[in-house]
Length: 278
Length: 206
Image 1 (cartoon, rainbow over the protein chains, first blue to last red):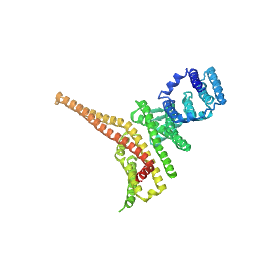
Image 2: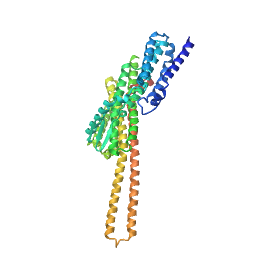
Image 3: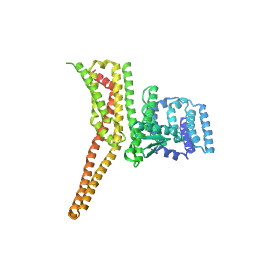
Image 4: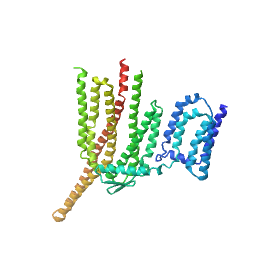
C-alpha cells in the first residue's frame, strides 16, 4: 500500500508539472530575477530544505488519516484551473495550484500532515508570480513621494511632490513601483521568516518581529529615496540609476543587521526566563 | 578603596562622556546644510574623528554599573540594557547612513575643488596673456612659453596632490565610519545579551 502511495505521489507531482508546464519557465524567470518582487524564492528553497530537515521525524511519526475532505479543494482547484484556461486568466490558473497541493496532501495524508506542512504551502502560494503587485503600489508611490518631499523641505531643500514625482531644483525624481520597497520587503519578510520560524519564542514575539520588519522596511525605503535624492543633488542625474540599485542592497543589509540585533534581545529574554524557572 | 566606591565615579564619567559626545555632534551638525556636499564632507570627517566617544562612554558606564550595587536591581539593569542597546543600534544606523552620504558627497567635493584649481589657473593664464600682449616687444616668446608650461605643470601637480590628499582622507574617513558602525553593531549585540554573558560568568565561577 505504502509503495503504491509512494508511486501515486509521483504521479500527482507529474500531473501537476504537466498542468503548469507552460508557466514553469515564466515563473522560474521571475523567481531568479533579482529585480522582481518574487526574487525571494531562493530563500524559500532554503526554508523548505530546513523545514523538512527539522520536521522529518515528526512527519514520519504522524499518523496518516486520509480524508475525503481533500476532494473539496481538489475539485475547486480543477474548476478554477478550467475557468482560468478557458478565460485565459493567469491569476486563476496560479490560484488553482495551492488548492491542488492542499487537496492532495489532505486526500493522501490527512489533516495532521496538512497542518504540519501548511507553512510551506502558504509560502509557496505567496511566491507564485501571479499577483500584479505593481498595480497595487500607486497609492504608496504617491504617499512616499509626499513624505520624502516633506523631509527634504524640512532639511531646507527646495523640493515639492506632485503625484509620484519629486521636484528638486531643476531635477525631477519619479518614485516608481519598484521604489516603494515591496521588493525588498518581500525578501526581508522571507529572511525574517527563515530566521524566526524555527526559534523557540512565543507567537506574539514572532508577530511583533514581523510588524517591526514592516516598519523597518518602510523607514528604510524612505531613507533610500532620500539618499537617491541627495545623490542627484550632489552629483546630478548621471549614474543615479546604478546608485539607486546599489542603495537598495545596502539598505536591505542594514535592515537585516538591525533585525539580527533584535534577535539577540529576544534570545536573551528566553535565557532569562529559563534562568528564572531554574 | 573598594570597586564599589569607584563605581559611581565611573558611571558619572561614562554619562558625562556620552552627553559631551552628543553635544559635540550637535555643534558639528548645526546649522544643518545637507544640500551642500562640502558640509556633508566636513561633518562626516569630524564625526569619524569623535565617533569613539559614545561607545567609550557606554562601556565606562556599564563597567561602573557592574561594580555597583545597582547591578542587583533588575529594573535598572534592564533599563540600561534597553537604553544603551537601542542607542548603539541608532548609532549603527546613523554611521552606516553617514558612510553612504559621505560616499556620494566626496566625488562632488573633489570635482568642485578641481574646477576651482582650473579656474584659478585659467585666471593666471589670462593675466599673463594680457601682460604679454601689452609688452610683446619686450618679452621673448620663449619666456612666455616657459611661463605657460610652468602654469600647466603646476596645475597637473596641484590636481595630483589634491587627488592624493582626498584619496587618503576618503579612505581614512570611510574606513573609520564603516569600522565604527560595526563596532556599534557588535556593542548592541553584546549589550542586549548582557545577561547571557553574566550567566556564563556565574557558571564559570561555580
